[in-house]
Amino acid sequence: MKPLNIGLIGYGFMGRTHSNGYKRVNDFFPELQHRPVLKCVCGRNAENAQAFADQWQYESIETDWRKVIERDDIDAIDICTPNNSHAEIAIAAAEAGKMILCEKPLALNPEEGATMVEAVEKAGVRNTVWYNYRRVPAVTLAKQLIDEGKLGRIFHYRANFLQDWTISEEVPQGGAALWRLDVNAAGSGVTGDLLAHCIDTALWLNGSIDNVTAVTETFVKERMHTETGKMEKVGIDDACAFLCRFNNGSLGLFESTRYARGHKALYTFEINGENASIRWDLHDLHRLEYFEHNDEGRLRGWRSIHVTDHGGEHPYMDKWWVPGLQIGYEHTFVHQVADFLKSVDEDKPCHPTFADAQETQKVCEAVLASGRDGSWKQV
Ligand code: SOE
Image (cartoon, rainbow, N blue to C red):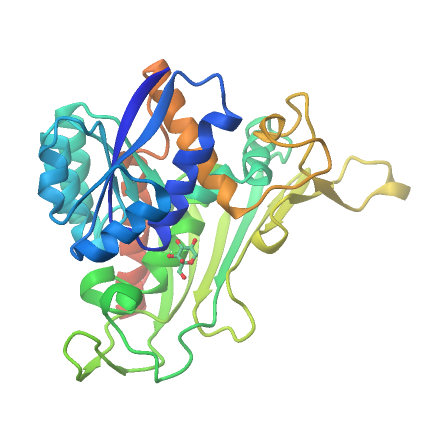
């Protein structure tokens, strides 16, 4: 088995999810020809980086990401920093010939995203973006059913991503823990952070989006900035809802907010086709709800498929326990690492690539632009 040396840049929540993926992958996907080696973790604070390295067993630390990219013993750069540094790091990594795994969203905006796509394509380096929900077995199963034509013509795509953690005006913005609320670090609010997941899944399952119209709102207009200690204008969208037309003729309805009291991370989608419908809920992630119109009338109804079967019936599940036993959120990252390593073994692209994620970025931009002036926008 060949080593694939990882340089992780940033060690917050996503640094943990990715590290867990690297550590578990070969135990459960023994056929892979590469083994991730946790070579280096990078963060500006040496003490914190060392503590992370000790906990997750990284071999070394750096405090400047440029040093990681310069190192000959690093094969792949994993970007887990706030969104405003993705482009600079990714472009430098591409120029140095490193493989790149970038946290979502790809960039602050499509202009930046385009420079990243150009850089990886020019350098010919392997690249992927961590839109992890594609790798929930039930979501991958939905993709298989749709591609097999089981739904027939698709009429509607509906998705929500609801949270409630920013309702209090006392929550500050900015800094290591709260950069998602600082527009300069995040680029946008729920659109880039949460709807980007819904859009990535939607483009994958239902194809490209033609045009959009949106409403956005910032409920708390000023928050204390942890870096300046001053009250500062909030530049992100706290909530966003949009309608769209897909190029296959179906209609889309999407909503995301961090003000839905009671919801912590409720990602749901429903797709209605001519012959069948599908729905999925992150809080019950191992189930796929399925309605088949051609069932015998007396028995027709929504089925709840427990996506845990073996024998190739249910994606990824042969790798885990025995039928009937479930997996969870963290496994989506193990799957993403497995798919990345498989792409290295087979010399094939690992989707979503930067180019795929740039399509999501363009939809986000059209949604935000429509939120500003209320008109329909072409993607
Ligand atoms: C925000 O709270 C967040 O952590 C997102 O940044 C993730 O992408 C999402 O999967 C869960 O929520």
